[in-house]
Picture 1 (cartoon, rainbow, N blue to C red):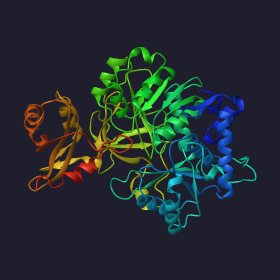
Picture 2 (cartoon, rainbow, N blue to C red):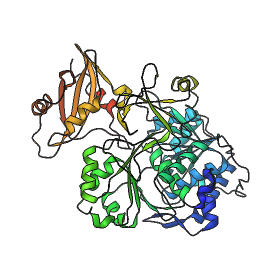
Picture 3 (cartoon, rainbow, N blue to C red):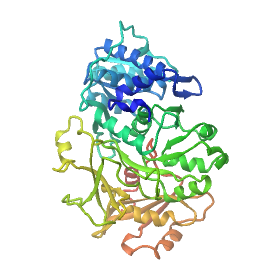
Picture 4 (tube, rainbow, N blue to C red):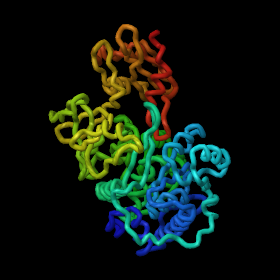
Length: 510
């Protein structure tokens, strides 16, 4: 850890390293070379001055729907510097979706891609957004052209309980909700991760994640800033480029899809990983088979962890100790995780009992933006947040995610946890992966339905898969229909979109 970690204010981490060693690399891109901590500080102050000239004050929202770039990171840091609330948005959102976010967040400024500016201006006028500015991935944009008289000095300290970011959930069950994250949430979690994963100023993180999400922005970048380390900054995941850069990196963070694609790359070898000390996976479940295959091929056991927009990171497999395939590890230091009865909230102390995962700690958000009733409904009276994830904890404290509460299938009065069926299907020869869902059934309420991706050339069909499962699963758990497809629908972070599958197959039994 560097002296950056001497402060628990994330706005100060960049300043601290820049003061000690301004030439230390913060990030490097293939097209534009190295951006040092000193240069990043100058850039972030320049953007802070531009925002201040647009009357952005502490507590004001700044929406950003821009491509991944050093300037996008500097914009986030500029908001921290000012005490403004940073609102990153997925670049895949349509203009119709953007209108909802602008109306809900009510930002002072929206920063978008140059090509989108005119259309966003029309939307902004309907949402009473005062300014629409631009940033691009090449270092240009109107926000950098604003003539500001001077950069804010930021001599005042910001309240740790003040909001730092508003992260909108994916909205798979209705309109997206804005999770309110405080400065203390961001600082405490980054410092905890930096210590737990042994980050130092000598580390080089291979960063190929998007930066509108907890994983790429707060897990990756905040941990780098807290430790004074550096990044190899890729615009997106490209297996050829990642394999080329692995010898220069010491840590890589990714989603499971990154690792399955790397396993398909002929250039992945133990020799190329001589400098790597840690691979981290998150944002979606990592198949135990992928974990074992990656370890056999490279000698590295991927460290899987568990978090969400509302809580940042909750658990992590240990840096030293057993990294168990299929588990997301014990609770992180300072974080309390319990398994509770989903209906009553009564804690379930017995190991290996499935229930609702609930979390309490300095990482947990302060609530949903402008939704006091929803916020109240999602917290127990003792302060534990109800994650919506079903799971269990073994006798050693390792947590296993079973699925989302809404994914639970009730068929003929019996509860079926999709993960139980998926694990059996995924273990069959010729299966790449599967997703098990419940869809309306005239006799059973919900019919257990499996959507399966087969390996190329594998002779798999509904009859053969069902025949294999009949010897492995209780009859009520057996899929009533099995559909073989080329791929499963996923969001930008690699999570399988079961809601899309339920929509697609909702008439299967009618």
